[in-house]
View (cartoon, rainbow, N blue to C red):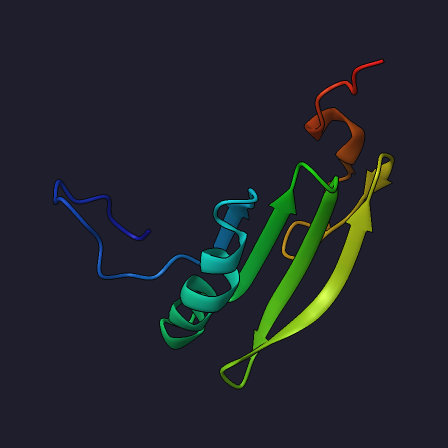
Length: 98
């Protein structure tokens, strides 16, 4: 944000949004929120699913979401728009029981 104002909301859309998907929110994240983010010109969207241990990376191209990459499990990754850094995806997930 160019200037951080003391207001209850911003009219400037973010460049990047990350949604943590759960069984109860996955449908809303994809069906309701993704079109709103596209309409508001959010450039990048991540959908993180801890249950499936996946990261879906989307980029906005002409008002449509395009899958830029998908990642799963553990390991070091680079994902748009943060390709300058490596992310240890395995650190995102809880230990599995037994």
